[in-house]
Image (cartoon, rainbow, N blue to C red; front, side):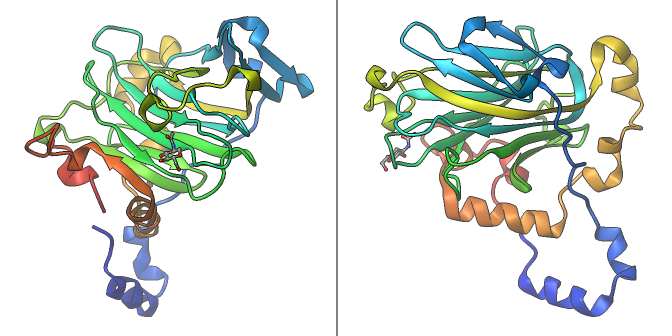
Length: 296
Ligand SMILES: *[C@@H]1O[C@H](CO)[C@@H](O)[C@H](O)[C@H]1NC(C)=O
């Protein structure tokens, strides 16, 4: 629940000293690094274009192929951020994805998927969380800006307590560790970070009604930032799982604060298109995690 307005008013009279117990912090500011520091191309290498020493790249999609890239390392917890400018103009039928995934059959996954649209029509941002191979937790929102005009940061904060999806500094979704409710939480399978641009005109835009117009190819999504600040599991697997000493493990990152919850509820109330938590035709009774993660 969002803090009711009177809480905010009361805080005004308390002064700084007494606020410390409820204080949380935004994640550390991402550091821009070149693509090749943290990433390698995955497929269709010639469809990735490099600029400015790899500080900026473009993914190109044409009728022959899309393309994608992945992180060199696998990570168990951390903060992962990408600045992306989505395919401008007529992007209907295309999907740009940025996600974390483990590489096994009962996999964990944390997804941002950007569904393109006809010129001037709004993109949809779909998010999803898989735990132990089970997904089906889609949420969809419109963005409060045009994601094709400028770069915006899309980030994931992941620790033992919570997964937070951020768009710039606005949390748009949380998935908490609801182990006590019998819901699996990603905690022991390292994930790589992936991104790709591909044709999905069988489902992406207006449910597949709007097809990709190849006369407008190539479709181009631009990237910069490439920030990765995680516990690299191949290097320190045991450490990642057991220590809890990294900045993202600390108290102020284990939950959102009141201001962050207010931002999140603003987005969710204003821009939600679909939330699996409220879909009674799919889930006759509400999935357990929804009682905590659903709407604030
Ligand atoms: C595309 O635009 C249509 C019409 O405004 C809208 O209904 C739809 O949600 C938009 N986004 C996608 C990805 O279909």
